[in-house]
Amino acid sequence: MASREGALARAAACFDQGLLKGRLAELVAVPSSSQEPGQEAELARYLTQHIAPWVERLGFTTRLHPNPLDGFGPILTAERMEDPARPTILLYGHGDTVRGLPEQWSNNRDPWALTEEGSLWYGRGTADNKGQHAINLLALEAVLAERGGKLGCNVKLVLEMAEERGSKGLREFVAANAGLLAADALIASDGPRLEPEVPTIATGSRGSFNFELSVKLREGGVHSGHWGGLTTDPAIVLAHALSTMMDRNGKVLVRDWFPQGGVPAAVKQVLAGCEVGGGGDAATIDPGWGEPGLSSAEKIYGWNRLIVLALLSGKPDNPMNAVAPDARAHCQIRYTVDSDISLFEPALRHHLDVHGLHQVKVENAGVRMPASRTTPDHPWVRWVQDSMQQSLGKRVQIIPNASGGLPGDVFIDHLGIPVVWVPHSYNGCKQHGPDEHLLQGPAREGLLAFAGLWWDAGEAATPPRR
Image (cartoon, rainbow, N blue to C red):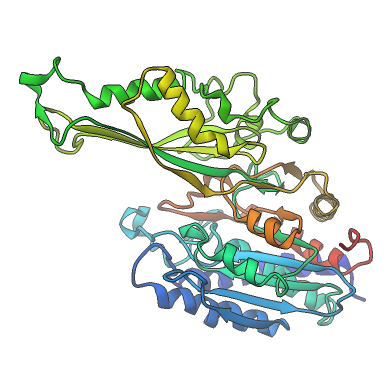
């Protein structure tokens, strides 16, 4: 007799018997970096030789689509429809990765080969995002095996190959294929858990608004001895501009960048008692840094941040005895969906002018990735939380949005469905850098959690259909 317990046991066996490790090794071996020229064939090969044959064996029909925008990777869609009267779950993932950076990996590790060391699986894409969508598909396979080839619900999949280039083309594709992708909810995996041992649900993501500050005073540098103390130093002007925007302890001083009324009550409620950690040895949580009066969770999940991504004047690698002609800072605001982004640039311009910093120009300002959020008390969010807690036997933390960027806004805007992210990684996974890895504990729990979700989606007690 098929049972929920049997499905979870099969999912656990996928990990314990090495099936997940073997499948992930195959996926990591495809050097599908969308950020490196000449890898276009590998982007398509990941989909056509690895994902499509796998899901077709599970009863999906697949289609490979060119990206609507020239120069970006293709998009795979797949669907497995059993009964239109039953709920349809949309899965999302991306098979492209950032640059391999082989020269920067420790202990001669190959980014395009899975290496097991202790409780870690190293390899490019293990955490972002090959390992995460592999876990969800392998859990689906386990439930199908337990139910004798039936699932009890419908599943659609969209897998893109340009996420690491800003998901270029995804919005246009989803808008043009809303009927093909119609579903009751998107339940997918990307990003980190709150902490390695804390199963997490994120119902959205912060957006990113980027801009540059520039001070250009002359066409070339001038002799530091002859002109130092007589002519304006652009680096000093820029430094003063930054100091007016954020104080010594990280409080942002351009207050029109923030949601009116502070952190929304619903966000405060869901973050009450939420602890933040798990960043690994490369990051620290400094209690005195950031917005006063907010918890660490509220700072990163419920509030906006200013970050200076890069700062340059002169030639740091080869300093000249000269007053530099210009200075430039690349900056970013990580913002929540509660913000009015139309105010960001004019508020900054007004702020600089009030401080007499008319020489500082604001350039190339705009949204790089929009913020999004499904309300944390949405029936599908609570349904996922209940299912996961039953499967894992522990509390599952809901956060209102992930701290990083995810393309959930695309599905909310064009499909009108709730978006539920169930991450299988953690903050210390070193994604986007050398030594990226997947932590085995969360990976095994991810298999159990998604096996329970797939099983429960085939039962009667799902949220009401739209």
